[in-house]
Amino acid sequence: PNGVVGRMPAAQHEMRVVTEPEGVQELRPFWTKFNTHPDADPDSYSLLLAQRPKAVTPFVLAATEKGELKAIMIGRSEDTIIQAKSGYLPLLRARARQITFLQDGFLGDRSPGMAKAMVLEILKRLKAGAADRTLLERVGVDTDLYRLGRTLPGAPSRDLSNEITECWSTTLPPTLNEFLNRKSKQHRGHLRRMARRFEKDFQGRVNFKNYRSKNDVASFCVCAEQVARETYQRGLNMGFVDDTEHRRRLELAADKGWLRAYVALVGQEPVAFWCGR
Image 1 (tube, rainbow, N blue to C red):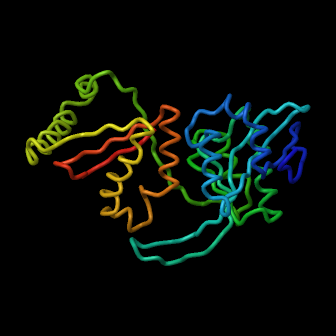
Image 2 (cartoon, one colour):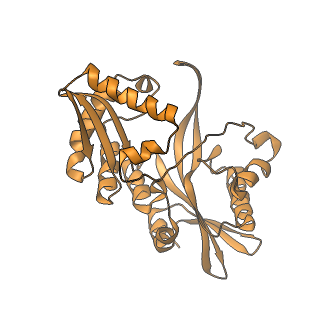
């Protein structure tokens, strides 16, 4: 099949690596069936490849058993800069080829045996020179993939950092009051005071806009860029930038009904924005 650069038996699984867009499309039915995260959506993935054709190529692990596809691990091979900073001051910069596996991109059979097969295949590809390093994005610390990714590599290659990012979720009720009533009295009061102070400081001039459709994207990007270019994140080359790639990604999110974007204005001046899916 297109994109197969090698196969290796791993336990009962036959492993292959898909490195061409045509091979990626062959995986689409399985991929769509099991996907749960916008970043790992096949259309989002294809859009990124199209926007960065020279810098990014597919790198998807596929495991089959007796000819039946059992699991995939969605990644990309890309040029990146490894850098260390102290605040805004760069201390170290080095170019590297990196294989990045997406958040929630391990789809299908996620048993311990399959997770082990995936990690061993990654190590094999690194040893063969496919990349300088591998990044597994936002892997849950309670998963077999995390445990094996931390323990199977040899000591010189192992990630020794212990930084953990906490992720939170909630189910939104129909009204703001219902949401606030879930909070403690102190927290509820704090949130309401912030809103009242903002409204008081700019009395009669505060307006909020909600963007969800594809036709809204250009207007949102103009407003968001006015705010983003003044933030400290811009100095760190992070955060929102009004460019072709961001616009295409927002348009795709709108097409799929995912887009949730908001701008706060004082008069006609954007002062804050929030964007998600």
